[in-house]
Image 1: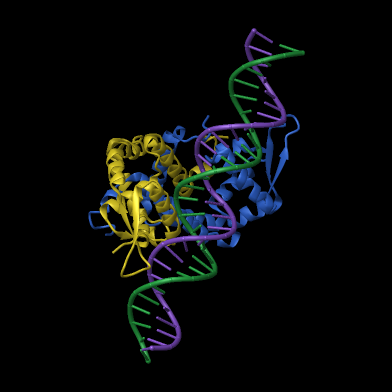
Image 2: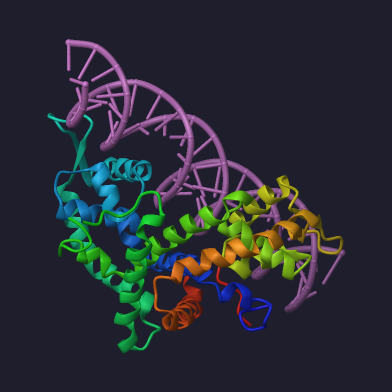
Length: 157
Length: 157
DNA sequence: ATCCAATCGTCAGCATGCTGATGATGTGTC
DNA sequence: GACACATCATCAGCATGCTGACGATTGGAT
């Protein structure tokens, strides 16, 4: 049984199955390209959001990347342990913990830039150059249209 | 900050980020549609492969769905606990544990058919009907081309 | 016959993700 | 001012995924 023998067609015609597998593949590619940095894809997303939004609270940060608050909290704890990120309780609203990217985090993010570009590039490299942009746009379209289906939806204005 | 304000464009132009998010969304849709069955997407894939290949060993089953042996072993243990699946040691090659879908598993799989179709359908429903097929084909193309990048590659003849 | 390399299943350990629950805090209403 | 309700962060618990390691077994080479 293989990709090409009829029996497996079932699974390989399923967009949900293929998306799971493609995600898995992206993680593998990322880990190859970013091995030297010891980070994960989600950790990188968290740092990017913290870079662009210094002082954002955890719940808003979670909404930016579409990960629930619990997971985000855990990811931040790991980044904080490595001193890439800092969390400060808000003095006015004591429920909030505000997130800041530390200097070490800024440096790391800058150094990762090339590896990150390569990782994303390799994922769609098998497509003809003229189809890559369209594929990414279609992905984005599906993500935006289906956004509300998952518990922690991305924030959309 | 939102999907549309320039700052977030960064992440939303990244195919890797979008694939992670779309996978997350598919899981959420699956769990809505298949809530009554108490299964996960991977458990369903395992059962489908066991249905089509009675007596397949765990390693080959893992390769069929692109999940590593350890995870597959855990998934099978859970399915076995629910008596949906049975594992038998091979008498000739004692390293192997052969997997069989139990009658209860066959029944469940049959009952899930409609919900599964709906789940996969909803994922690509936001696309114009004439683009859905092409999108799924592109996904498959990327999965096949990048297959070898992840540790547990899918078996390809 | 004996060693060697490969394979299989499992273990420990870690990182994403989810759920439901809880405690602390804010906000709005009356 | 008191009360209900919402929001934030975290906890426990579970399911996917990965890595590196291990013992058991197999098959091939010598």
